[in-house]
Length: 437
Ligand code: DLL
Image 1 (spheres, rainbow, N blue to C red):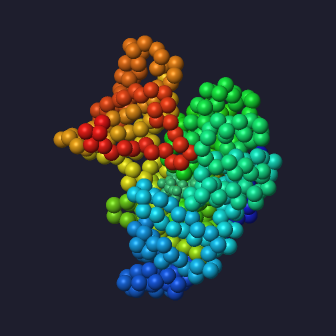
Image 2 (image 1 turned 45 degrees about the vertical axis):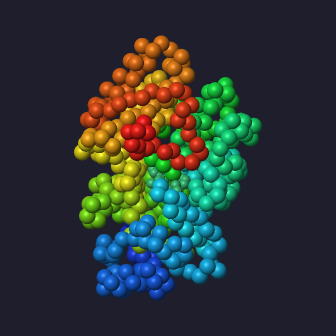
Image 3 (image 1 turned 120 degrees about the vertical axis):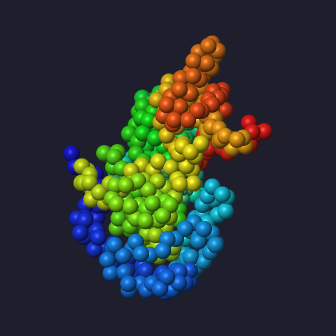
């Protein structure tokens, strides 16, 4: 069967045509930022670069990066390339460090954004007959409103329920015959648990597909969600600075997320040296926007670790795929010289029975040696069981983690409902001093 696409012509453009389009749009973006954003004018002047220097896509590698720090320094509107009267929407991200960055959109930017979320929604199996429950938080976060307008553009029925109140979410899901759920993967799993508690089986719902994203998650977590909710789940990626959701999303092949290459140019660089890596190598994703009017960004360092897959996708889309994001450069944990991401711990935990999907990593750096303690919530049945069984489970989890990570790990099994999720992004890592443990 032919894959469903929102914009077949653009999504299947031959590579040559994509690259020609990218070059033209990049040249005009460079011109615009040089003449309209003092930050870029100064940066280019310092490096002796004029926009006309860029004559091929490979010249992009010679341009300087833009970082989150640059956005912060120019807070709130310093990086905008249009006057405030042309901005029709603002969003912001608090970020992990709590200092906000502000992002703006012109009317055209919003049209493009809806087009791009429509594409990933259709790729994820959504059509005009669907009833879509958007359980991302509405507000300054880009997740809910970004998908909202794409879903309306398709003609789907939107339930703008926002995050929170899982019992109500499930009741509405049942009564309104929701067919598509949109939220963070951790919240989806949390709701799956609530459904079981409420005695609502997937067969009583009309749910068919789930579009999840906004935080890293593992293949094992996808399987758990699909099984427990009886749906097909796809991964969706984006970031507010660059636009929000819609930057890339999986198709029904579930083997990488197609990047909207007619709007963004992706590169993967070595996070240490900034060198562009050969196709297929893992590194930090760098994105350049080539259609954005309000906040164009040149070579923005996303901090997200992935690789680019240029092999043709069986779905027929020609836009390059990025592998699911394994973590952020600033989320990488280094314990006694061993580097890993929380998502690797998640893969191990999800494969073990008796635990719930809720976990947290507590990193203690106060002693001579850094220690990792993994808190895992135990299922109701298990918790009411004998202590001997709990001890066996604790050993099983510890052995599996030690084998996978190659370091010693302390495991703490915690009572059901200790680590329950919220509708926002899951907080997986806590750095603590020993006195706080
Ligand atoms: O999280 C936009 C979004 C909303 C994407 C809904 C998908 C669905 P921010 O709040 O600015 O924007 O956070 C962006 O979240 O740099 C990644 O580190 C992480 N992230 C987003 N999507 C994924 C994903 C939205 N599918 C930051 N897998 C990004 C892993 C993701 N990490």
